[in-house]
Length: 77
Image (tube, rainbow, N blue to C red; front, side):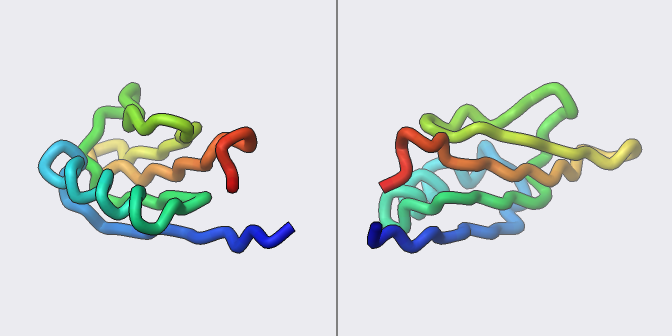
């Protein structure tokens, strides 16, 4: 196996405002793990990123969600 996992980490300060650029970074780097800070999500919302499973944690007094998205095993190349 010649797979080298990559991690994309970004303090994006608003998921919706940065969505297109995030898609470009995902296409170029094909990360196995994506770590997002300050996504401004609500606790119940998870980024709709195809082929990724997401986990999040929110501060109780703000929408400064930290999200970790893992590529589903069938999509790792």
